[in-house]
Picture 1 (cartoon, rainbow, N blue to C red):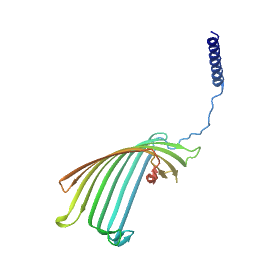
Picture 2: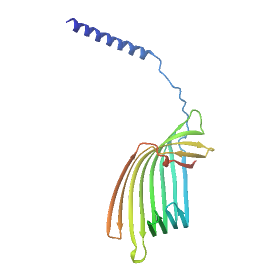
Picture 3: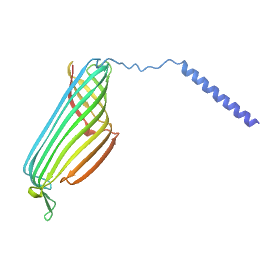
Picture 4: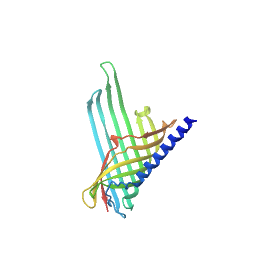
Length: 250
């Protein structure tokens, strides 16, 4: 009986102590970090940008490591306009469209592993082009009282469709594959922005979160049909996804 009484007394003491601490905490003044918040992108602002990239290379009897007598040419081209509207202070929504095209022609390439092992690859042709449509939402943050430098967080939903052709050989020995690809992705892309003046700014962003799914269908020599499903999730910083661009605020 004394043991039960002691336990009740102990629990009563603990309960009273909790009530006393709660009363003291509620009596304290509300803590404020005094973080300053200013209007960085005002409502009604139009945000537009355009990125263009092009690269080309030609090889004639080129040699690199185990590759000898390399002869061919290749080029890649990408065009990506963007348009967004700030429907609320520091919040904008819009879209981005992108078109990418690449061509590779390989007339000859010898892979020499040693003096007795050599492989030859010739008459290779590859052409691909892809369209991307992306819905965007951005939330901007100013750093202190600065109106020139800030951060933003971008959420994007992207759909892509592409076609590619691949052929090897020549004459009656030619073999070709035609492939179509549909893809969808959801991503989170934080970034930083630096205004050069009132109307133009430099942006840099990097993908850290995302989910991707794609389905490809390939037909070889108009006979053989193959399908591929691919999905991936990324929850880390991808250094290869860093992009730079110039954006105009109108």
